[in-house]
Length: 554
Image (cartoon, rainbow, N blue to C red):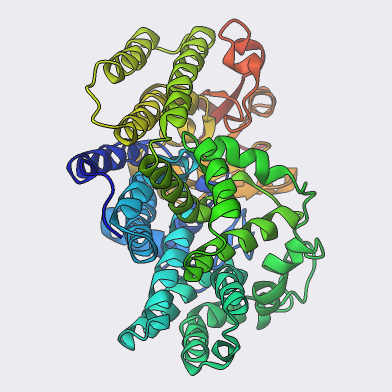
């Protein structure tokens, strides 16, 4: 197809650069609890013990997720040291890779305009950027899925045989990130495409079976690790029971057990959860996505059928998530490249018909709503430098209204990026630094000097993943008073605990000094009482870091 926006090639690289730069500040912010800090700690254990087979978290053998993201973080630790930046960096690099593959898929199935706009949309979609700050498995998983998808398109086009290897390798890495369910995401669109076009012979095409076979060869490191850690040790207690097979959990319970709610990890999902979650998670492009889906249903039926590889995969994955009993908002991130392509195609179709002005108005409204939201939050929380944050947000809104736009597409994208800039500057420069002050485990851990990294450190009565990660060495999780007594006998040592327990120990005669007493709040479960500066003191509580000397005889 011929390019439809003569100005896009001019502003595309600048918007893309701006979008990437908006994502970068999150790399230097501290890791937020719970999941990010837990995963960072699991990778830390790999490096401290040089053990790349056994995963440990929460004080015990850990089976919940496969190894690949932890291996990537551990490699980064080896290069850059055990820091929050080193934990987030490889995930960010995979996210950049997913941008590249999103472009290639959209370019090959549509045209260069759609590809560029899709990348711009994906770069600043809200939960995509949040996933680069609060790193879990999604940046790795998304990159591996879209990487495998593009190479599978090349396999379909009978390109060089190396694409079969790359498709299998990316698919294997995706499996070693989240489990075998990703094969449903990768294959679902192809199955629908073959059924629609009646290409039934493709089900027996040796290329696809060779990709599948190579994929299982590439996941052998994961299978070996699970077998060694769990299947060879039926005596280990996992999920409260023994005789747990790591291989069974990997192939069944980890994903399908959650879907059918028969595995050890259960949930209580709602089929509408991801419908309303998408409306905020894909901001500022949510209404464009809704319009794009309606457009596909009305006008795309008789167009290029190969695009159903994307549409089908999106549909199958979304239905799989919606019908599952275990649902979390960040699961949606793996859909964002395809959401972005669908939205970009819709925008270009409207632009070709000069019907994009309604969505420009929507972006203008969202921009104003974001300004009001930020201003209101600043007023309630009384964040430090709140006036500066408000001035920056107001300045961005003002700037978007004095730009001389060449066409509606440029205005749509610029205003979407202006909203993203407002949100991410506010979040990464003001709001998250404010929240992280109340992540008490991290604040307490930083008081422990590096010279004392070999002293015993433990948590009792209150456990924090960030305390475990940011402490110089390892942290023991004490689960009973007897374990506490035994730990005190190892003095000098450090103990992270509640104020009540700390006061009780000191009153009992323990020779201990309070090294830190940071205020604590569960910052990922925000409540109005915490956000309101006038009520905050009533909902936060202190955590204590005790330095216990070696002359105690309790």
